[in-house]
Image (cartoon, rainbow, N blue to C red):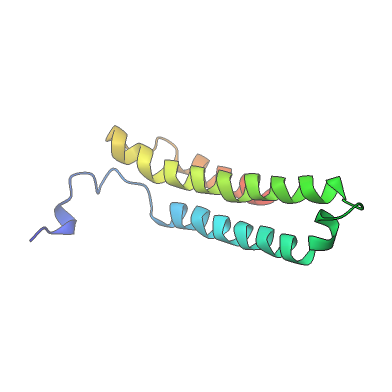
Length: 102
């Protein structure tokens, strides 16, 4: 049986809380997008389509869900595949808070 504490890359990985925060933000953004589509469905169909509503919800999905997922995966995968630690982990945390701020 393998012992997880003897993993050679364990010392090189960043804190697991950083990708988890990104994935939690991505899940919240996706649910907010789904709620916007559900509650704003009258603005998306018919002859009174509001393009600002469509663009806003699509950007919310793109920036909130896709960017958070991508950055969360990169903060975990890049150090694992490169075999090196993040040089400035505080920069990744600052990037997360800048993403949250919009």
